[in-house]
Length: 616
Image 1: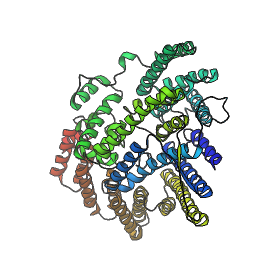
Image 2: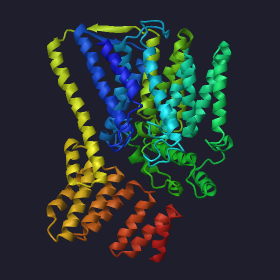
Image 3: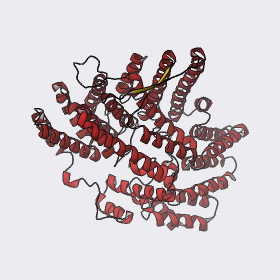
Image 4: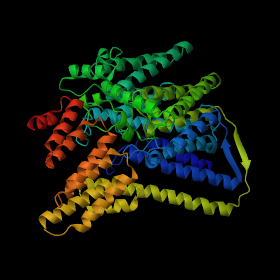
């Protein structure tokens, strides 16, 4: 059983950061999350099998039990009292990681590794009993492949595949430059502090890939990691010092043509309010997009205000995409990404504050502080934990300017598991008297059911994604059949049904009643499932606008739906603009002018709203 669990963990470490699936609605994160769920089910099931076989429950007592338990309990409470428990349980659709299910998975993997693999003390590769080094080697092999692909991306190997300019900012198999850099920086210390000259050499690939991401937070975190490792080598007068200094040469050479250090603006202390930040951004950006830090500062302000509004447990894990609209600063309308949906606060700590309140943020910080104190103590007795500790600390740095994704979150929980295994933590066992056959009869169906559910989720998403390029009622109906509780699928099905109803009425001159009724039914079902999701309300409004080709009275219903949405998003200028358009269509020029005026007040450079207002 232990060997099986070890094999599954090797697969988890190797494949998770590499996985992507172009046929899914989210190419990178979704397949990674489903794979982690699958591995968690297989590993946990095998672990429990070992209990049944030995008639003993084997769970390692670790130094982190208390903060992990507190963190988990707060996440459960925040999910129970969430504005949308479904999202808080499974994660926001398109991000997926961060819901309660993913948190439980990471914690189960943490304990399965520290208890099920039963690694021995030491990082000496000559020790045949050592079970930690092989997992590190697996991580390094996978990371080397990721880095090679990233470098090849920079030279255009797949520039025709992606919509994004991947040559300018590489993202390899992680899907986004900042995510890639955060992952690579976390693994980098394992290369640099290895006793293997091969890994020291391969670290040049990793450093080069990080630089090619052009991620400010990633490059800053890498600089800190290199400085810390240099300091360690100076203290120990290690022979590897010369290798570290040689590694700094390509860093300096490669970083210069990318972005002058003087232009990297992480936080400008002279602009303390969102108004000052945005006005400065408007003056300096010209025809380019807004500065990434200007965008972050505005989103951070909205997240802080949201946390203050719901200070105890927030609005629920992963609900930021809905609740951010409630406190979204009006200045957001003047940024180049003014009409983008933000499903994360782009700061892991503020994201916890906004969605899980002071209790959630406090439990997360407690876990970090507790782990850091334990780790600092462990470095004195077990030097092998040092590279893992430095890599783990880098995650805390990159999370300041972004948010964790599946591959990085896995390291956040499993780096401590690897380190604890090195300290030879004692495993506590408890005898059980459950009948083996009865336990197996209960366990196997549950495991099979969970695996089938993951398979159905995978199939449903592919059908849903296929329907975007090939509009089809059959595809969406099949997706809904596989995932009946996914409101996004119902909303898209309703839109397709309303288009079909309009086409039957206008082109075939026939009664579209069946499709018309189904469209209204499914649109209402979707919004009932999540009444705070602005996108679902916008989708319902589109359904009603399509149906207005059959019956003009549906325009009033569409207006009512958008007015409901605007109450949830009072600073969304685009919503007010669309409300004005509907008022125009309903021959209510005064109300239309008032809506356009409000839109312009929120976004003074809103050309379309200004044009319509002046026209009226």
